[in-house]
Image (cartoon, rainbow, N blue to C red; front, top):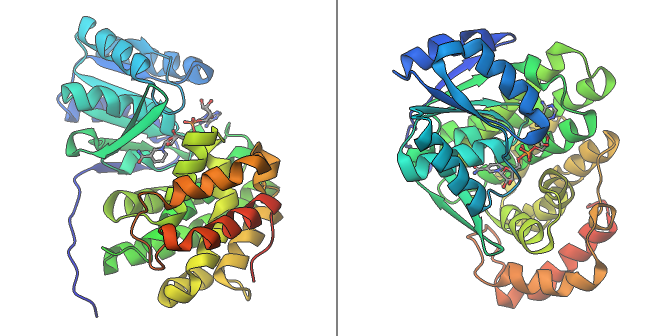
Length: 356
Ligand code: NAD
């Protein structure tokens, strides 16, 4: 048994089909009276319905969340919150909407009630990101951790199958990297393994029966566990690569995670054998952890090659250079000395080669 530090992070989770019905009770428990409801433009109708059900408890809606939280959008939302006298933000949607709530909370301390409708996991983390002048700055601040999270699987029934699968792989990536984190602890290991197991069972079920509430609930449960891992322990090579590819080459978030995960796990396999054992067990596969993750994505119709999702071969060299500059801690180091190995990893990801 290794020595460890475990830091509990305070958030209240309400889980269950139809649990959106508890929204008013949860707003009251926060001591709030005027909620600003946030969403993307695509989910504005949902935000409108939430505001309607809140009645006098709603200050208004701000349906303009977009990917990567541009500072201009954050400022606009902060102004609207101030002008309307909002005393809490209800963020209903995926990571982009939760991210906007966090940008408001960072500035004002406004409590966030998050209602996630994807599996990205941001609702369980004190991590924020804001993009200014083309650069995404990320940081940790306890103020941005949502106080309450309502997980209602019924709200994920509209998530298209393709996005359900890639978003689920995004969640698995948090759990998989959590298993070899430098600051891991036994509780996070349990949650990570169970999160991978839940999602690995849920994704084929959602693909076969998109309207089946059981598969959707299982996936959201896995997303909660995996998001908690992301919020509690440090991430490594996989997240660094995805941050690089998403940030500098504008590739879609969940798809990048889906493609890179198997390759990053293959790179780390020999350096993190216990994590691999847990991943294999959770996937219930006879293949290696990396190959099992590759198969899970491919067999459920997700992209497995960077070239399928908009990456240009000519950019692979630059991506390798950026990734090895300022590297994260990783069980197998990946600084400038490993630049060739990272370039090779990216080539395999580009081509969609199944790892051994
Ligand atoms: P997203 O929030 O950008 O959503 C993608 C699209 O799907 C949007 O148009 C959204 O409106 C739509 N959508 C969401 N749920 C839907 C549903 N149930 N039905 C129909 N459409 C739905 O995507 P995402 O992958 O959830 O989040 C990605 C962003 O979150 C990235 O910017 C990433 O960096 C960030 N993120 C942050 C953290 C963190 O801890 N800070 C963690 C994970 C992700």
